[in-house]
Image (cartoon, rainbow, N blue to C red; front, side, top):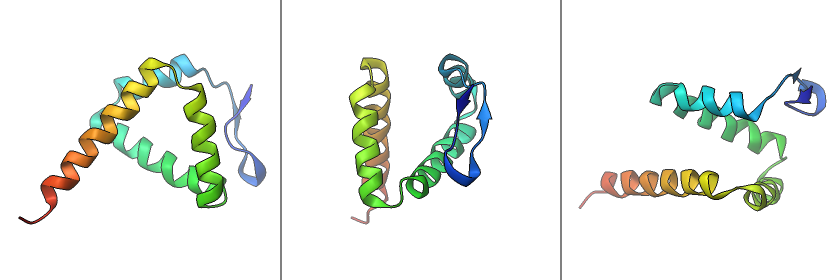
Length: 89
């Protein structure tokens, strides 16, 4: 069993990265965005703010393979394009 959260709100469940990845990939775009939004907000709280978050993101980046890095990089690029398109001319 893996621990999903640490501290007072720990959830112990069988977490298989393969199953989680497949579940994410097979979800609708709306559900994928909701999962990322929720993960981002929970991660920020779990890391006790910006300094802890920066450290955790560094740890995660160290462990990404090419597929994970490509996904994060391409998603960030699309997000930035969308933000640019929203700016008034």
